[in-house]
Length: 101
Image (cartoon, rainbow, N blue to C red; front, side, top):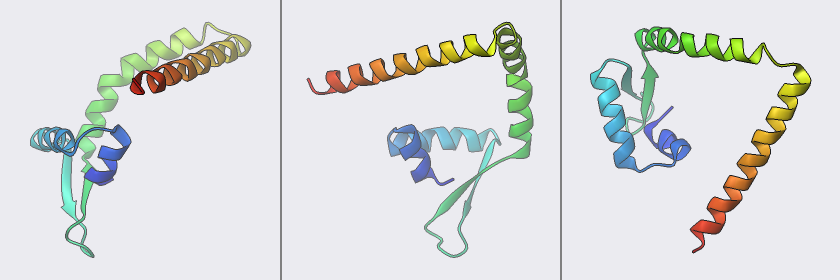
């Protein structure tokens, strides 16, 4: 991953990405390395310690999500998924209409 690609994926400004990456790097969660073939290109590397910390932090959420999901049948989950997709489409259309004002 490069900072430019991250910026595009997140749809934020270069300054916002730089500020976030500076903080993540200061905290030891990522490192920036230059591409040996093209020194202008910077690659972001996720540190193993950050991965371990992230897993520990999100494990309770994952376990709770799985516990909640286990209470539904596959048919019920398909219905929920259909609803969420419809909501996403409606909200996306609303955002598109609002941006045209």
